[in-house]
Image (cartoon, rainbow, N blue to C red; front, side):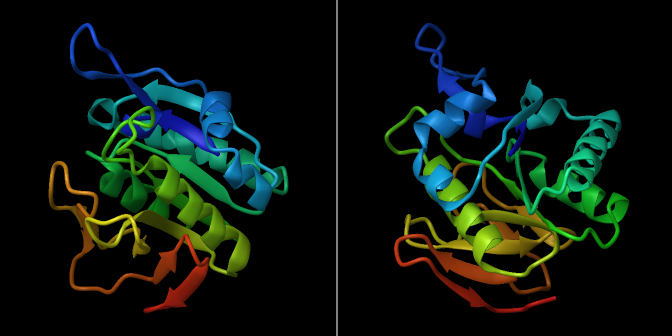
Length: 195
C-alpha cells in the first residue's frame, strides 16, 4: 500500500467538525487486519494530503514510488488517494506508467476511516481481493458500485470521473464499462470489460 492521504486516511476533528488527513500507514493496516490475511502487506507513506492539493509534481513522486515497488518485486499496489482528484491521478499514472507488469489500483473513501459509516474497509478489501485473485495488470480505480456496501467496481483509469460529492458510488466510467465487479462478502469477481 502506498499512501497519499485523503479521506481514506483521515480522522474526524471534533474541534472543527471537519476531517484531517493524519493516519500513519501502519494505522490503516491495524484498523483493517482482515486485508493482511489475504496478502503480505507492506506500507509506505508518500504524503498525507488532501487530493485537491495534488499538483503535477506529486504524480512524478507517485510514479517513482510505484517504479521502486515494481523493482522490489511487489505483486500489486494499492494507492490510497483522496477522491476529489483521484480520477486525474489515475489518468496521469496510466499515461506515465505505460503497460505496468502489475496491478496498480487507486482506492479512496467517501467517509473517513474512523467513522462507523466509512466505506474505506470495503473498498480496501475489494481492492485486495481483486489484486490477489486476478491476473489484471495496469492502472485502475476501485470504489463502490452502488450506494450500498454490497459491491465494488474496478474502473478504467482514463475513462472514469467523480460525479457526486458524497455518494459511495460517486465514480462512474464515461463511455465505457467497469472492468470488473467485486462482492467482498462472497469474494466473487466478475469481469465486465476485461482490457
